[in-house]
Image 1 (spheres, rainbow, N blue to C red):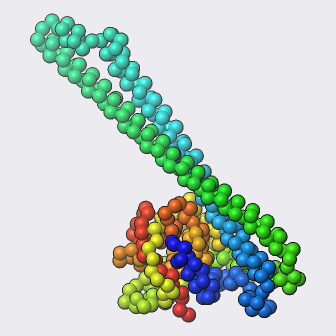
Image 2: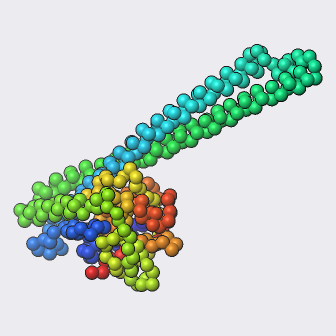
Image 3: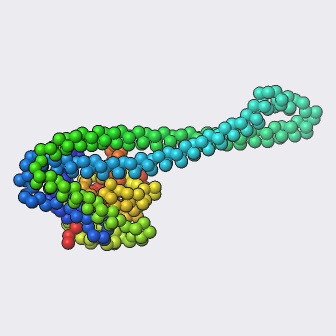
Length: 355
């Protein structure tokens, strides 16, 4: 997503409080993350405004940390399993090679049996034909052994490639996390310096900001859909596309209106090992719900996604993807509803629920 669009989204969501913190469940919606100031926010002194801005930035960096740690945990598990697969493949390859050497090398290189000598030693035409047939069977068996060794070698090479890819993902994620940690440490230093300049009224306001965010996170957690719940899909309408049907999770609003221009989003998906883990918003991830992760859209932002004839509405409840060139990480259910299982480009548009 480009910088201009990101700024537009942030301004839009700030103006539309309905988007600010609503989860993708029928539970009570989390409250706005920023409380109302005693006086209008625009009248806050510069130091207070900067402190609040830093507080929001720190909150975001800490949310990213949750998402990154979750992904690193899953990668660690995948890497451990992949190492086991690679070890098994290499053991099978060694066994196949040993068998081939025992059958072929001893026959053709040690001189224990020479094909030509075997044939020339025939005492009759019938004996020659019989020995030729026997040799043919031996060659066929050796060829089978060789083919098995070749297949095993290819499998070992594939498993090694998968492991290398997992290591590359882990390195990229560690790099992203290092940048995030550096940014967080810098923000905390700036915040500490600013707090010394705040008035008692400003400190009280900042305290309410923190309390409100903690409450919002707790509300997100309590809005989690139980993992064993069957989540049905129901139809919804997105204005002005009244003639098109979008699917949403049961319990969600049935009518929405667009709140921005459509844009193309490169989407991947996640599920399986992430099912039941915490998301950056505090909500427990349910791979069967229509949700997604975004690097910059505020939690609670709803997106209408279209791919061909497939149309759904998802809500942002996590941070990611942390892979260059990708914009959204969809839940497993969302990707299935859009009809893809890898990485695809979809048309996306921010929408707000019509009460």
